[in-house]
Image (cartoon, rainbow, N blue to C red; front, side, top):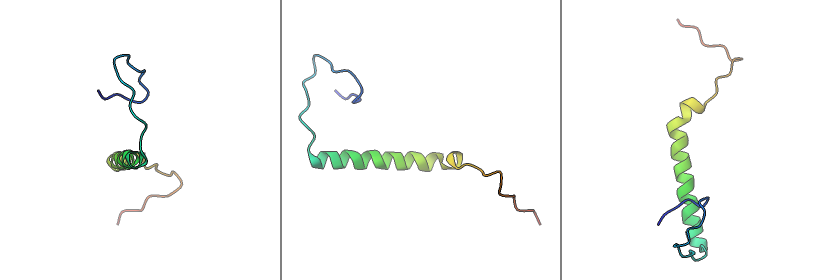
Length: 59
């Protein structure tokens, strides 16, 4: 059964063995890739517009 780490333990679930260093690296890499992808998808909305930079005039 998959669950978030923040979920309370379920009595029917057996405790998972400690995470190995390689597993931790793989999990962290996967989380980092997911975060990078989410940032790319939302980048225009997350890029603040500075009110102090004048817009270029149209020719």
